Image (cartoon, rainbow, N blue to C red; front, side, top):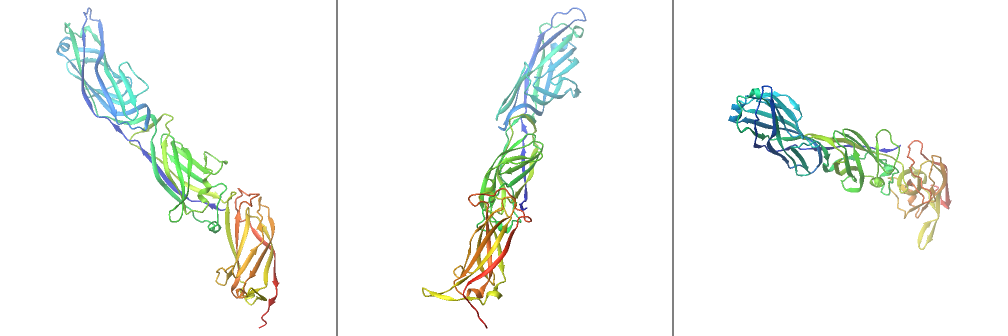
Length: 515
C-alpha cells in the first residue's frame, strides 16, 4: 500500500494579562453613639453602624472576559480607627468589636497594629478587649471578589469590556461592659475611621471567556516519496479518502474552537488549492486527536472525525507541500472556567497527512513502461513501398496480439509511441502506433483479462534504422463512465498487470537485404 505521509508541528499560545487598579484613599468616616445610663457592673450595651464607605474599581477590563463568578486579587485595605478624646476619657476598652467588610469581599488574612489576627469569617474579624488609648490600625488582605454573594452594605458589578466595581462600607458591631467605663459621658462619643485601598491586581478569574487569537501559518507538511506515476502531467488524483490527522496537547483551562484552512502549494510556494476546514474543538487540559477526512469512518480511542468533502481537491495535482494556515482559535465561552492571569497557556501539537492510495470516480493516474533493445533485430527491416500522391509509403505493419491480465482497481487506457536508440521518442509522422482497447479494471481483487492489439505502421522505411522499442503509457481511471471502481487501496504486491500470450505478426511485403 502506498501512503503519502509526513508531519509538521504547530503551536498556539494565549496569555491572559494581569489587570491592575490604582490605589485609592484616604477614605474617611465616623461612627458616633450615645451611651445609655448604666446600673450594675454586669450590664453591657451594644452599638453598630457603618463607619465609612468606599468605591473600588478595576478599569480596562478586556472584552474577552464575557462573564464573571469570581475574581482573585492581590490587594489590601488599611483601616485606622481613632477614638476621640471624650471616648478615651469615658471608656478604657471595648469588650468585643466585630469589623465586617461586604460579603462579596474575600479576605485571606488580617493584622492589628502589625500583629496577625485570626479571621472570624472570610469577611470579618472579631477583636477582644480593644484598648481605646491608641489608634487601632488594621490591614485586611483581600484575596478575591465573589460575584455569587452580596450583603446589605456592599454591591459588586461587572460591565463587560469596561469595569469591575465594588461599592460598600465597613461595618462595626461593638459590645461594651459598664465596668470598663471611667465615667458616663454626656452626649455622643465617636470612633473616627479612615481607610486606604492599595494598588491591586487581578490574578485569577472564574468566568466565561471569549479569547480570540489569529495567525497565518502553523508549519507545513512536505510530500515526499511520491510514486512516479502520480507526477505525470495528465494525472488527476481524486483520492477516495485522504486523512489529515491533527494531534494536540493543551494546558488551556477551557476548550478551544479552531477554524483553519488547508492550502496546497507547489515547489515554488505558489498556492494550488485550498479548503476551509469545518470548525473543530480542542479539549481543555489534555490530548485531542482530530482526523479530517472526506467521509465518515470508524475510529478508535478518542479520535474525532471532521468531514471535509472537498479534501481531495488538495491532491488533484500532487503538491510539494500542505500548510495549515489562516487559523482562528477562540476559547469556549459557553461555561465557566478558571484562568490564571499572567500565565502563558499553550496548545501544541503536530499534524500529518496519510492517504492510502485508493481512487475516487474522477481520478486519472499514469504509469510508463518501456520495451526496448529491438534495434539489432529490426534495423534492416523494410517493407515494399508504393507511390501514393507522389510519396513512397511502406505497405506493411507490425501487430502485437496479447492478453492483458489486470488486478489493478483502475481502467487502463494504453498510449504507445516509438523510441530510438537514445531513448528519445520518434515522431508519429514517421511511426504510428494504435492501441485498440481499454483494459478492464479489477473491481474486487480478481483478475480481468482483455485481449489487446497494438499496431505499428511506419510512414518511411528509414525509421527501422532508429527504432529500438516502444514506450507504453498506461493511463488509469477509476471509472469507464459506466461502472466506477472506488475505494480500493492500491497494493504493490497483489495488484499486478501481466502481459500473456504475446504474438507478433508482420503484415505486408518485406524486402530482405541478403547482404
